[in-house]
Length: 470
Image (tube, rainbow, N blue to C red; front, side):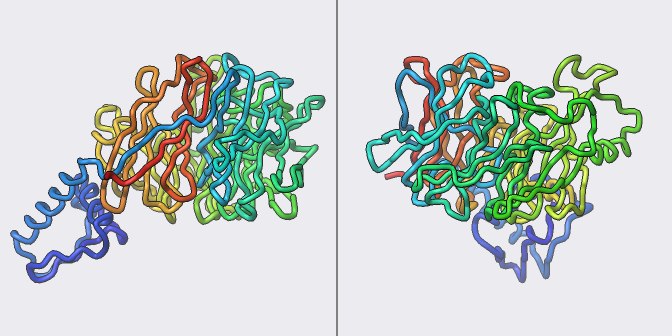
């Protein structure tokens, strides 16, 4: 539907778009699904031909956008007998490159055919792109998994040299977060909380805070997102009051509980008073670009006798302000891996039961309404795939699986230009050890880091470089 940010002015037989072609194309996607009862337009002496001209103009832009205006070239960064990968997309502005775009973070592991055991350490390294992609080993971690890695994130307050990752004490099983400096070649801070051992679940884009999660609980209730055998201090309660999403101040190291599992359970019971489950957990604590709100999923019934009368399957979207106000439960689900756009808008999927008609939608978190879409169903055949918005907000990437390959559909929002990559082998790994597409942009909005399988069967790091078509 048309909102304040999607208004078109038509005056005296002249069509005058308020903003760029990007906005005009967004209007096109919105008008296709227009709710006429809720639409507000600004018109004055509008004639039929001016509307026809507008539609013709938009259709012409759409036709021109079908021809790729840029190239996508795939390069392999790492190789060898061991496996190398970065990890997760699920933090706002997840950028594997450091502030100078010279170094790329990565991990080296021995095997990918099973979930890691506590003693299975992953070597942490950086790739020097100015020195023939030389690998420089820095440290190691015992807190990682094949999907998320170790929640790498370059420190926004010192992006040239500092980054976050998770680790654990092998003896106690307690998870903690590390801040490492590549110039000093050492850990400069460890965020340890003995009473509630939490790891990073999402760093703020301004570097002020990070979200803390109990990865032991995650491993118990949804293995793929946790660290096997990590200490779970709230295991005896299905909706504890002392566990949930924590906020950690990066400078002071102090933590506070933002929202508890108990609060979330009570909120859900307002609509499902007879709900029965065996334990809630939280996935995808995604801070927005302004670092003042987090969107996440409260889930249950993902392990054991899932979806049974005694263990209901719940997958409930929530949002909350970072100061703890405005806890909101959302009826509209927008897919498992959404992404923040600017302001209060998110990018996701409308989850149409007919998968051929699913759209890559724009969702207003405040209004809890779908307000438009990106591209078309032909461009994005699987809008619920792994999605990522470039740092400047102009480039959108959707990574999706087809057979044993991952593909990447890339859309330039300023003019609607579009291209699709060749397939990159992801092997036959599935379930907890699957290789998700996970596209992650660099800082100059012209390259994406992705995973893939080398010819020798090892998991390696690849980059898709984007350049103007010659």
